[in-house]
Image (cartoon, rainbow over all chains, first blue to last red; front, side):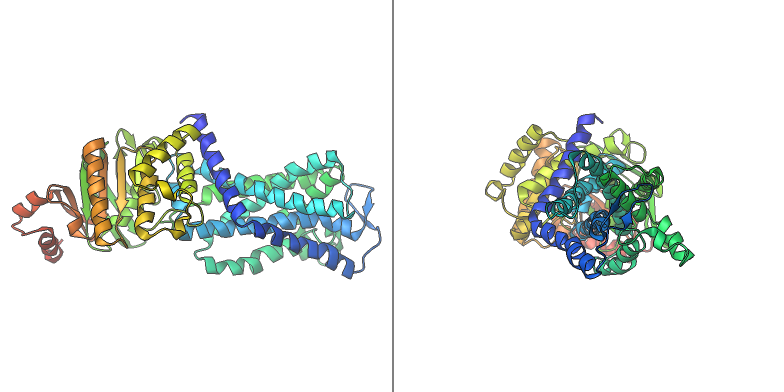
Amino acid sequence: MKVRFFWHAYLGIQSREWQRFWQQRNRFATALIRPLLWLFIFAVGLGLSDNGYNLKGSSQTTSYQGYLVPGLCAMAILFNSMQSALSIVYDREVGSMRVLLVSPLPRWFLLSSKLLAMGTLSVIQASAFLAIAWMTGVVDIGLIPLLFVLPVFLMAALMLGSLGLLIATWIKQLENFAGVMNFVIFPVFFLSSALYPAENFQGRNSLLYGLVMANPFTHVTEAIRHALTLSWHPQSLAFAIASTALLALFAVRGFSPQRTNVL
Amino acid sequence: MELLANEVSFRYGTREALKNISFRLKSGQFHGLLGPNGSGKTTLFGLITRLLAMQRGQIRLGQHLLNRHAPEAMNSLGVVFQQSALDPDLTVLQNLEYHGALQGMGKQARHQAIDREMSRFSLNGRAGARVRTLSGGHQRQVELARALLHSPSLLILDEPTTGLDLDTRHGLICHIHQLCRDEGLTVLWATHLVDEVWPTDNVLLLHEGRLKMQGIAETLCHQTDSADLRELIQTLGKAQP
């Protein structure tokens, strides 16, 4: 099989995701509202306006709103990834998933391409939120931090997209997706350092602290936070990269048309 | 292109859906896969398309074993599923573009093939229509155009006339026969409707997961003293396995 066959197929998958995205462009706007509510209502309502939030391994401090921005970028990616998982289940129900799976190209390639295509859209979603945070003066981002944070966004999108693909493999019906909200998205989000420093759990509840530190979402949030401030936190980055690789491997290897009732 | 199935068996848990099926599809000919609902037709399609993993036996498409050389084997296969495989929210053109790309076709080759298939099925005026706005008959035509886009040498269709009126059904069957005759396409047409198979067609009779008979329809009827295929299938259903 020639390389250009793979390239054409990848472009086809990417193009289809864009077409679907364009059709549901209002989804883009509504998905932005969620992190913006957290940023401009929740953060202000809590009254945490002091500049006491600093980063692990860095002397820089920020306001609570500024602290929230990386977590909310990760949140935008998380929700978009789950939305993509929902679209995989929908594709399966309407039958269009079969067209993908009967392609002569290897299944690992087709699924990886789909993950990458979905991930690109998540990156755009998170970037749009970051742009609003920058335009409203919540964060100050230069060109160089932006260049650093975009690959981290993509890594986060691949990690969370893989999680979405794994979930889509196990969800039998579209109606069951609401359960995912309660049992996956919220625990993943709240048991992380997106809204509060992980250290807040340390000494208060060792079980919760352990869960927060074992949660890949914590590390991807930290990787975004450090990329935005051009600081270096190798543990979080390594954990996030390893989690992305593992989840992607499980998602692609574990995807079975038989299990998902594609036929 | 020939398709060769050798001692293929498949189980869903403890239920045996296919039991030691062996057959050969002859190159450039129309083959009707006949059997009542639940006889194993869709399972067989699942195995040929790799949507089900092979448990026992082998399927060979041309020179390529499906388990070992899947990409090469699948390259020459066109599939029409029982239920639509089109994205209802995309247009006809977008669906065909997507399928062509998944077959590794470049832009130019894709556009030429789309023009060819749209003309073949008289779909030229509907390129920009969303699939969900089309009638059942037109959706089936788009499905066929999609399946033929990459010029496969083997076309398999699983109950492709589901939901179609009599005229559209007849038109579709004639069209596929014409493709076998004119373009040398090998066809496996699964159905439970015996009138979709012509007397001169090859038939495979599937019943409760077993391949009961195979051969030319009128010859099989003659050999078993059956007036027609319907009577032959009824006789097979009554006979002990």
